[in-house]
Figure 1 (cartoon, rainbow, N blue to C red):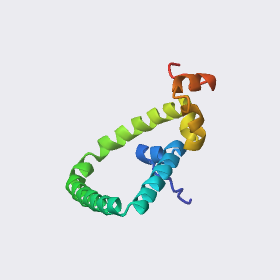
Figure 2: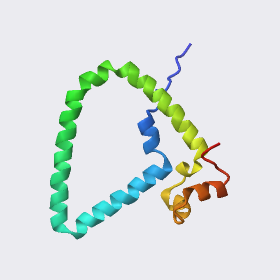
Figure 3: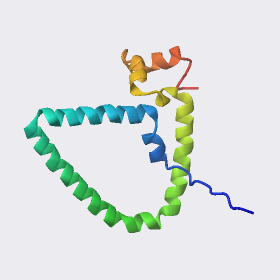
Figure 4: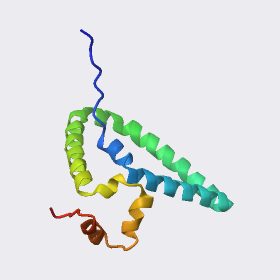
Length: 126
């Protein structure tokens, strides 16, 4: 008998990042950031210094936190499972999460999300 490879469950962070609304908004903001840096050389140099600082701090923090993360891995896995279930419920109740920001923008143009959700047959309180 051959063994079947089972993919590990996705982390809630990966799932959120891959939501069309989140990923398309990130792409738009990233593009605006890059374009702004390209247009303003002085701002670009300040941003690049800040980026280097963030990378250094992140690296140090990750190295320091790794032993703690490894010890807490079972608890993190349980929290991830509950967070994924919560995300499932949010995706059911807010289908706008599965639309790119350009489509979702039609709902936000009125700045009344509740009206938009009701108009599309989705209610936050149900």
